[in-house]
Structures are given as C-alpha cells and as structure tokens.
Amino acid sequence: MRTTVESVEENAEAAKSRHRGDSGRSVTALAQQDEDNGQYTNNGNGSVDTTLERWSPEDPDGAQLAGSLFPGGGGGMFVHGVVHGPGGDPVSGAMLTLTDSGGRQIDRARSDEEGGFRVHPGSGGTYILIASAGQFQPSASMVAVNDRPVRRDVELSGAGVLIGMVHAGTRPVPGAMVVLTDVRGEVVASGATGSGGGYRLPDLLGGSYTLTVSAEGHRPVATQISVPDGQETTVDVPLEAGTRLTGVVRSANLGVPVPEAQVSLLDSTGGVVSAMTTDAEGGYEFTDLPGGEYTVIATGYPPVASSLHLDGQEAVHDVALGHSGSE
Image (cartoon, rainbow, N blue to C red):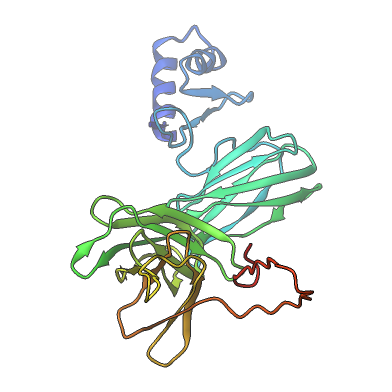
C-alpha cells in the first residue's frame, strides 16, 4: 500500500525553480513534463495544480479486505444490509455471495466489523443471496433488484454440536448407535460411538430433540435434550445391561420337551412383560429384561372338543392339540 501526496507548496516552488533555470521553456511545457512524471498538471491557464494518488488497502491477491470484491459495479444498484447472529449481535467476516438464477456468481463480499455488507448485481433481476460464517448454519434468500438499492439483513442460526459418552456403569460402550430426532420424529443426525464410547453430532440447529441410544446386550434409552444455537452441548448416556432369560418346557411325567406350550413372563406387579410359545424343542427366550422379580407361567394345550358317531364298528379319531393360530 502507498499514498503519494505532493503538497501545493512543494510543487509550486519546484515549478518556479525549474522556470528560473530554463527561461526558454514555457510554464505549460514544464507542467506537461511534470505531468508525464506523475507529479502535477497544468490546469490550462498557466497555473499548476497538484494531483492526489491514493491506493486502496488490498490483500496479496488484490481483493479488498472488506466490502464488495467488485466495488462500484452497477452504480447505485446494490444489495446491502447487516449480518446478525442468533442473539442479534453483528457477525463480522461473514461471506456473502450473490448468484443469479442459473447459479452463476455475480459478486462476493465480506461483512465488516459491524456486520455490514454490500454486493452489486450489475443489473436488475432476481438473485440468490448466500451467507455463511464459521460456526453458523449457512442461509440463502431470494432478492429482487430493480433500479434502486435493496436492504436485506441476514440472520444466521448457530450450528450446535452434541457430544457425550455412552457407558454401562464405569465401562464405556463402543459401537452403540446414537440417533437424534426432532419434534416431528424425523432423524436429523445419527452415528456410532467410538472405541472409547464417545460420540459427536455436529451442525445442529438450536432446538429440542430426542436422543436415543441402543447397543447389543443393553436396553435402549431415549431422553429429551435441548441444543442451544451455536454452542456445544454434552450429554452422557448410561445404559443398563439387558438380561436374557431362556429355558425349556418339559412334560412332568415323561420329561420330554413340550413344543407349542404357552409361556408368559410377569413382573413383580403381575403385569405381563412378554409372552410366547415354545419351539419344536420346547425352548423359549426373553431378552432385554431389566433387573427385578419375575414370574414365569407355562401352560399346555387348551382343550379341544369334537363330535362323532359310533355304530358298533371299530373307529379311529385323531385329536390335534395346539394354540390359536398354530398348525
């Protein structure tokens, strides 16, 4: 950067000295010579005016440090405004990009220390103004430009981050699935915990969510959480190991397995936790049970009644036992 200002007194004195040293040359000629040297010019009436040369602050690439990257375009036709954060504070250093409907970049600018910006569309029309900055969610809005400046303030939402640890007691749980859903039940983020049981869900809008964590051999857990705009929130999730209950139903007299027997599991209040029928080997299984007192009830087949007529001859009548829906 450089600024060259030739003072009136210095230029005038230099002109007089050169005129005295070269009486054969006119003031006009001397002034033209100095104009060629970039110092001052003749205003056409014999007197000498100084010139002022100024250079705007630029970065090494030649782009202005603040404001539009293409200043002066479009004359008085421009889009300007202030970039605000979630709390209303101005956001400096935000990048504003103006594109046309075809996605072609028209102008770019960075917001100043007070959040102000100005971009020049060059001509009237409908444009898209894109804003992005640091730990904020980017935004985009339509802007219609006619023949006058357009004021369009931009409000950026903070990009929150949710981190935490999934553990069972003092033991971390690796490979646990972490799912975040919004108030409409839509999944907005998900991921698996690392080897140390940690997880991280970035780029979240501020708001209320449901955090659900599940892992093999553990009972799933769901909890309501709140993520502030632009902040990092830590939520550790404890999991309980799910108990697995298995067994075989056998005939009390013969000791053989009883397939298709009905098995019900009741909790300490008498409520039915789960129910099932045994497999071909008489086996049953209940999983993901919390610790506590339970009751197991096994029943055989329900009675089956059928009508028949005997006429004194030998007869054969088979009976099929089973539960409703079984074959």
